[in-house]
Amino acid sequence: MSILKVLKKKNKNTGKKPLSLRKQEEDAEFVRQRKKEGIGLKSSLIEYAAMKKGLSVDRISKRVIVVKSDKIERGFSLMNGDYSSRVGSILCTNKEDSRYLLKQKGLTVTESRLFKDSDFDEAVKYAEKIGYPVVVKPTTLSRGRGITPDIKQKESLQKAWTKAVNAYKKKSKNHKILVEKHFHGEDFRFYVVGDKLVSATHRKRASVTGDGKSSVLQLIKRKNNERQVNPYLVDHLIPEDYTLLEMLHEQKIDLDFIPKMNQEITLRKQSNIHAGGDNIDVTDSAHPEFKAIAIKAIQAIPGLAYGGVDIIAPDITIKPNEKNHIVSEVEFSPAPLAHFPYLGKKRNMAGAVIDYYFK
Image 1 (cartoon, one colour):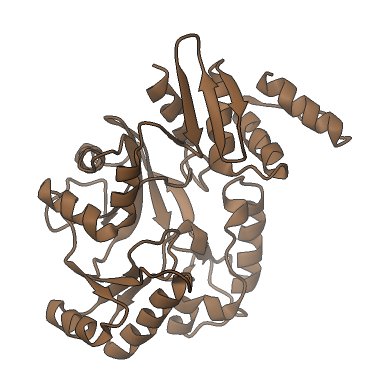
Image 2 (cartoon, rainbow, N blue to C red; image 1 turned 120 degrees about the horizontal axis):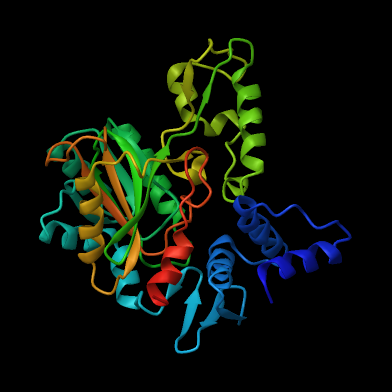
């Protein structure tokens, strides 16, 4: 069934008139309809990309599809096909292991060490050795869960340690905590398929910009209204709970504060989109050598044909060197944040994966 027929059928079933399917909106409407069936964004995007290419698609489950051409048949779980192996997944999940491989390939990584959850005293000694500020994070979790950046003293380290341990499921036995030297800069996610860079996205920390008359809370609500119409950001709104907006506490700003015109107020420490951050496309402005670093990082992980590379740098428009960036992590199954950016040009991540398999 064609994409247009799928959407018209869904709209007919819901009693609504078929929507105007402009080219730039068709994919968004497709994933919205699939979401009603309990199908996630990644799986619906890979399905859409295959159908758009004229390929046959059999949906096996909410996570798995089989895509067929005249000569090729491939299975996909979310946006990952059979060229992305279990080995690659394990290496990316264990951040210390992937970081070791990156370092072996000559890529710049931050100083870090892995600890058991019972080794807090040793972690304190290590933090003092490498010097504050440090970052504390669970080693096998994603979406920024349990991470605390920019820790400047032992008391804060204790709170961050507890947060990281509690982020694990209680039944889990793998309570490993990573302590690393904090590197100051902005957070960028590069998406690589094969030997090609598909996108570069600035993951900007949650913030609002003043208009001279609206309060911080009013600005958050307004920005969340904008995010509601974005198929990706709709599930990642900025918290309106003051207790979760830790940067307001540090700036001694409350939700009733009215920022000046064009005054930017940072709300959270984490740059993760799940924490309310913005995904801003910077593909065209990234320095070519940063793009080359991202490609090299993917190739450094055995069993990984494509994935996300997180780079922290003050500025990715200038030539990288050993002191102005680090490769933070490699993501096996990154979120399709470049497909529906808050600002900038959208990049077809799922389409690049389908093209890779069905050249």
